[in-house]
Image (cartoon, rainbow, N blue to C red; front, side, top):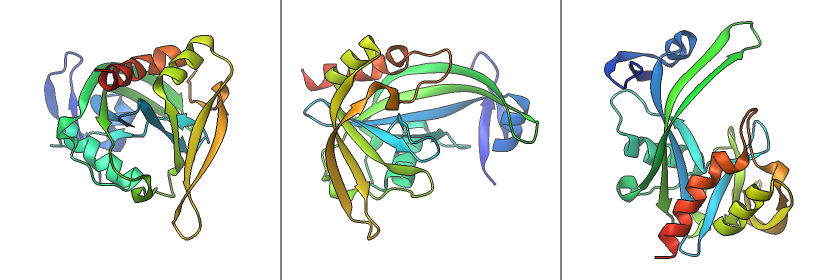
Length: 208
């Protein structure tokens, strides 16, 4: 059973409930959006299995009693398969998120979360990646400046390194251009609004 801490709308701690209760009742809780980048100004997007689109390197809930940076470390390990020291991760921002969605059974999924968005420098070998096959198809490495320009234009393609695993769990790569439409953008969002703060932070950190 997974438990989440929940809060009032001002961020005051109230208690904890199961993940299911938090979402059925629309209780405010914390999530973590994890981004990895390298010294060359590249950033890693995850290829989500459920939608075959590109999103955060890893993401998920902050569990009961867990710090945000510990959640970063855990989600990266669970989804991407590498161990990192997340204590030096840099905060980009905390974004409130509200969404109601009707599930297949007719019930309403109520999401009320503060998304804690962090970036962390990845200096290891990509051969260390070991993706959770239930959630992740691979990673896409793109240049942050080129991605920012793409999202401003809302059309076009940029070069990318596609990182996946073969049936023997060996990392295989492919260089190809990726299209603007391959990046995850929800209804009533723009790609620039969704990702620009992260991309600008990576550019800032790698051009110091």
